[in-house]
Image (cartoon, rainbow, N blue to C red; front, side):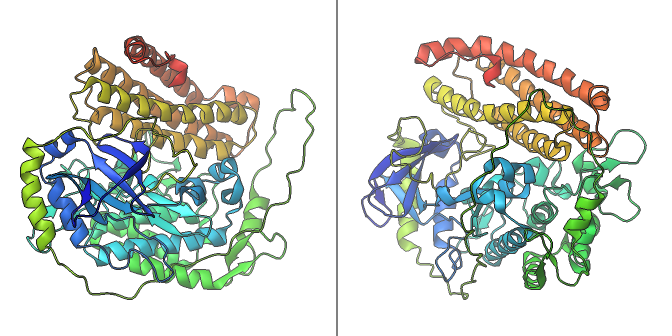
Length: 583
């Protein structure tokens, strides 16, 4: 394989495999990885080659800051296999020093992650928020709309730096031809209300839709993982779904609103008035007029100002807060929390103090690069694409690559092709392979990532029942609910038609993840209800707990039906059989 300008591309270890293709290390281009598409992917989307060419011709000039940090992992070079567009080269991301965004927004995830993530103070979260706003601003300045702006496409480093990944689905416009390439995918939780029900493969997105998702990410960063549209419902009937609340501008911080913050949530007084007003504009004014949502540039400026005013608490050095406040709101929050009544441990436990933490790395604000004029020398690229258009139809063949999808043997970082919930980087895409082996491998990858959520939930349920940390457990359930919803959407988009019993397997697994997500939501509401005053009787007598148990039973039924169909395929491929407990 060659780059579009004729330089050899030598693939190394297989780093990941998803619904669209594979990612390999590249020995010929240090600091790069190569994403190659399955031929069926290129056939299914004839515009993909033109999209990639347009992306490479319009690379954001500020995708790296002056210090060299990668803000956006953008396609850098087309890769050709003969006359066929095979994929592209993109910068490798240091996965050893980065985590997905939710690993730092959610306090329970920070504790579970350990290491530097467990020591992320509010100072670091404010810095992370500012850098996320800047990365968004860089893309908008270049005319790109992120579209699928979900928490798994945002990586955070130990220095509070941000890298945006999975860029090949973003909405761009080719300045040479005027052709617009839409973003056809998106996680429902981060889609603005004006796009509900829209055909994303044909819908023009505007930066204001990214401003909605950005506001949610910033709210969760600044408010300890709280979601603006989750809380205690004081209205008539059941609490509406998030899309309905977002449509009505009914967020947890609305004055006189029917949705109130959870009792255990940090108070809005943590935020300075200008930041609170910006959230109000994002979720109230923006519901009626998306153009009134704060822009990424506005958020960045406000967060830089806030970071400059931060003060360290004299009583607890891990607390940071706006220096214009007379007292530490974190201390006040801890003092306000109602005492909980945990059950005594079953047996005496020896507590071993942890070792002293290593020095925390220095904070970094991304240093914006000065605007540069783009070079749009496109003649060679367009000539290659013209030939490739024929090659895609007539010359496509399977690309090299087999393996487990793990990191390279040297333990190097995975690179910019993120595996989402174990299924690969491309949520919302289909295999489209008509190849039983490829379809089975894609489904097996997805299943492998589903087990982690089950483990976290099985830890959180007894912890909440024993009144350990119901607030943290609620966040664990919310995270799992989001992951399972993503898994459900990914299963729905898989093509399993070449597998024996494939359509039935797809239906059973989709129903299983749907019921599991419902159970997670009920468990989260149950844990929220325990946050104020917890006892074993209140934990066991909750209607939310009963509803969660019922949904879990429904999920187990569908999982068992799926396993019955799946295990013969495992046997045919020489893979170990699974049980419903492995999903």
